[in-house]
Image (tube, rainbow, N blue to C red; front, side, top):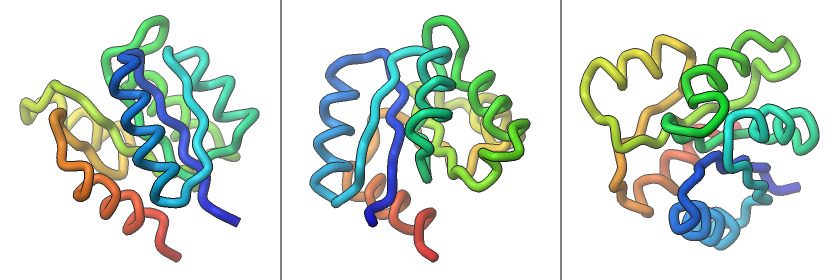
Length: 122
């Protein structure tokens, strides 16, 4: 069974490219375009990893990450924050809230795939 990835981003072009990229790499993919939809998808889709934008409608990525880490059934889900916000303060906050990695946009697709595969390796 292939690993499941939830893409959470409100930018259609980014969602399309990430969805294509992850499916090409052999992952099963679901998408959410805001923080509340992300929480619903976490419960329904049960991803192994979440690619999580920070600037989202409804709940921001920081809040979604906090909720993932506070939910016992979701403790094993890997979280990769993706954001145009690349200052040290934002990166530190994301990692402090429990993100497994923080990737600044724009990013190398090859590096992102390698990171996802590394995080999902047994």
